[in-house]
Image 1 (cartoon, one colour):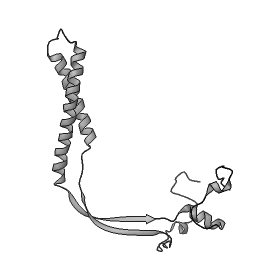
Image 2: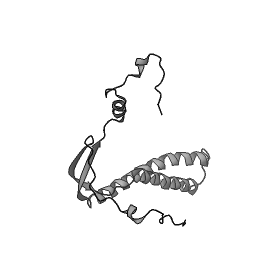
Image 3: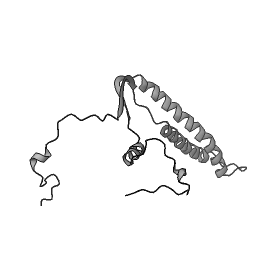
Image 4: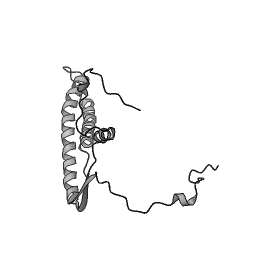
Length: 154
């Protein structure tokens, strides 16, 4: 036996693909609707806002050590105060940059034709009931009276 997975002991005739058209299942309900859709790239807003918060947190750290120490507040308190203000500003600036990028990218949006396919398959539980000879429909497990969960026959 060879180690190549593409080589097999199956004759070449068995590898020929079936070219016949697929037989549609009469119980499957499929609808196709066509629509024109505008397609454009969109920035990830959360990433822009997170990047703005991180950049402005670094600015808060630089501002904390840029000025001389205050005798009333230690550097940790100053950094916390500046971090709260700068992170808020950074999130707002990041969101604003993302909005501006989104507006500029929207101008280059394309309109394309799209097909939407809705496929509804028959209820699997109804098929099992009809195979057992029961009528399809909702099943009442409480009708047994013992309160146990249904068992699966194998």
